[in-house]
Length: 482
Ligand code: PLP
Image (tube, rainbow, N blue to C red; front, top):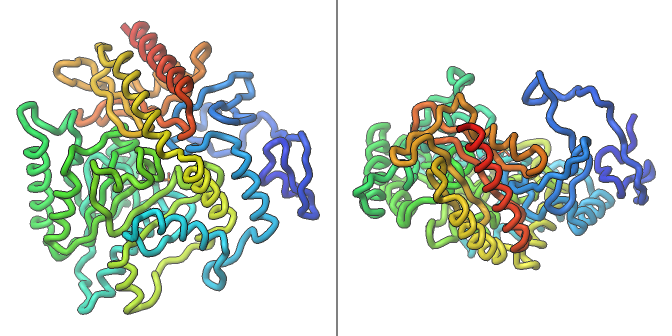
């Protein structure tokens, strides 16, 4: 059996079998043959041997600039000492306890930190291990809320989500997602109580002669129509990402959009669920994306993930407001949903430390400053490129959408794999940069894009380097493509 060192071995902190800490440079080596069920069974991914700050070192000697923190996860960069120490300390105190019988201080601290960051809007936090699990919990919480009302609204079993969206990989969360490519194989097994309206996408959805307020009014009308079509008193919630992540590539709404959607939800008594798994926890320049004036409305239920734990542990969460929590408290007195690893002490302690670093080091403000610089440099370098259709984003969350033809906005055929090829070129020498790819949809409603989401503590020179390398990769890719 491997010693516990295998669990956290980062090359310098290991546990011995007596559970005290030893410092060592020993690294447990694995063989070169893979036993992991990787996304591809034909080729193994590049092997990472070390990661620190903004850089990931590979077994082939390359040092990759991590411009995306994975999928907008590593908000503190890699190898943060404070977080490492907090994890070790938590392991020495309590590594696991079952949430049905016990509460850990780590879970309580994290929940308190999260709730106090919401200006009194949210009442309770439910901590799980992934964004998909958070979405599942949010859906069940919304459903349960209507069963707790007096009289219960048992007919509320449906959800309205958006066409251009991704909410997770488990069947419920995937059912909520509109992402055609990710749904396709599983379509027959997905939930059928979810319908969709268009997302707010100024680049592709707004008509050339339309003002923002007219576009918003049209989208509100579409949502209103969808409520009426499916039966207004059968809908639990409208579900949306404040800034669309993987499905579109960092697309913020136009001003007034969420206020208008909230008004439609309120008209029909439905909840508003905001999925901030990717765009939340500081990524877009406010701790919660809904706290930005651009979004401007608080949800009833919110999901968070990725930047919550910065990649140090698998951790995500659901925040519920007073309306929802009070209904449960007054009636059944419990959320009817439990998981073995919910509120996991180590996951919670790591996330708490990540959030403390963000708060104490003023990193959300740095996201705003560095985000403004990133936007300016991206526009200077790439706006004129004939295959760059749109540059959009918020905070340190930027997407670049590619088009075959700039004037008509015609996207590349997703089968060409433009975004993935750009990612692959970036990973090669001499660029050595990780860019997050997203493919467009076959129906032409979205194009291939790449996404930039560096750590919140990047400096001006880091941003300059990221933009410079990104521009060179994109320029060289299209020069070669012809
Ligand atoms: N929601 C959004 C907006 C996401 O971007 C993702 C993942 O990319 C998820 C939910 C699912 O999160 P996870 O991959 O942690 O299950």
